[in-house]
Image: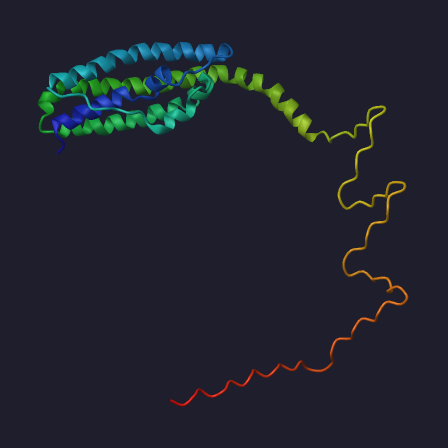
Length: 239
């Protein structure tokens, strides 16, 4: 059985940390076309309705003599910062359904609490919040379906141009008049410039014979190498 104080704090969290409230206060959504503007107008209407629920949630917490706990929005909301309303709307239905499910779990806990008599106003508020989440999900989904063909049509030319550019092979451009010839890649056979000395042969190539009169090179010893014997140390003097 959960305490009344914990249930009220959870209700405040449910109301304050909604997907719609975060997007309207922190996401900084830019509008680029009519589709974005139509969705943003709906978001603002829902935000106005949301404010009254936030006030009621804080009133319930203060009436119980509690101090509101600190609240932070889910971290995955930040993935849509600076995204267009059309992108935000594509996830609105999913987030609204999740919040409505959390509200139903909280509502069941309130009704099962031994303090349910003192939670009458909070229970009513929780029911209203659940209804608003479900309604907002339906409204945003309907508006998004209305503007989605326009969004797809606007993105089609850019996608088509990008696909055509990727499919087109790179053309071989002739060098401009008077331009110097490009050097060949490493490994290509390059002719030596006129008057340049011959390049020395790499190690391992056949060496030319020694000049006349030069002493012959000593031949290496044949057979196994003989290790020199160590010197014989004299015996220590007798004491």
